[in-house]
Length: 500
View 1 (cartoon, rainbow, N blue to C red):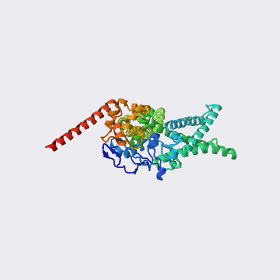
View 2: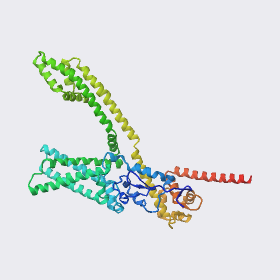
View 3: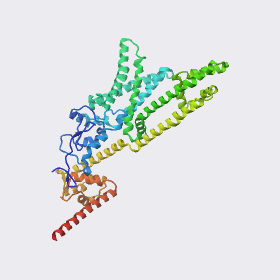
């Protein structure tokens, strides 16, 4: 018979290939390479311990989830894999390749957060050296020693980035760089930045220049290295994975969620400014030109000429209105215009009322509202934390059950269960779950459904509900006691009914 939860059989979960590229079957995960696919799943590989503890495809070890939650495995896995960071930054090798590479020490190192943090720090430092080079391009503030030092750092960073690229190819294969999915496209862009701006322009081109005698120190070859600063987007990955940078991640997430609002804001501001510029050309500028044609003193004529130079054209007047929109010292020229056109204040303050007071404040309110909603309901982050905790709990309980099942029969007898409390190592594991030796007999009665043996389903369901604060254990103990009392009452009532 198959596994049961609270006496009811669990139907085998159907196999389905989730959007992350992982076959989800009651916790049995298969890599894409085993299924003949190319995309790299970014989510599940973050928890290396879970992937190592989870049985591979083809083994007859179905995962028993607590409280009969087998059917929820696929949905929670998909929610974790489709992390929102994929839409803002680079995923960079969070997929799974062959099982051998993935289980290796090298694979665990490449997938780890410290490795990603170190590479992000190198990218950040490389951007500093690029900034020093860009500053030196137009000035001469740095000494030759500083230039040689930054040049040596540049070569060191190129070497580090190439080593990282080779490690990722070793662990994940070349499939993760095929631009077939959004995550793979970001990996492809990162690879091209390393190969083109690093290997090609830093090593290959200077070497060819040395051999063939052309100058590679200036021009497009050197200028294109500034594209390497685009790799700063990889910091998003670290921000999303590390609780230390949660606030920074929320800012980046809010920027991404407000992108549509910002786009439409620019369009609406442009339209409003365009309309007011047309009206201004037909009224203010034409009036200034008419005033200039009349006989006025030389000082006023020079002032009008400056105003016409500032406002005389659709593009110029739109630029002046943007200056008004930003509050950038616009009173200097509006006061001069009012000397010659007394009603010009109506024009400018109407624009301020619509574009600044109403429109910009409305946009600010929309952006703040979106940011608050994201902050209160960060579903991806909460789902990731919940899924990670659930995986660790299941893995710990599965390890404990296998340690207790000394005969390998798939069930725990009273002797096996009791002996675990006598063993010092196993007793320490029970203490981690807040169970003492005096709880042994009572705990067995609570876990057992009456047949004298404990299945893995009964074990994982009950312990996953009992682990935690003392109140949780007390509630569960009371629940089981009430169930037994209710069963006794029903049995007594049935016997009395039969006697009648």
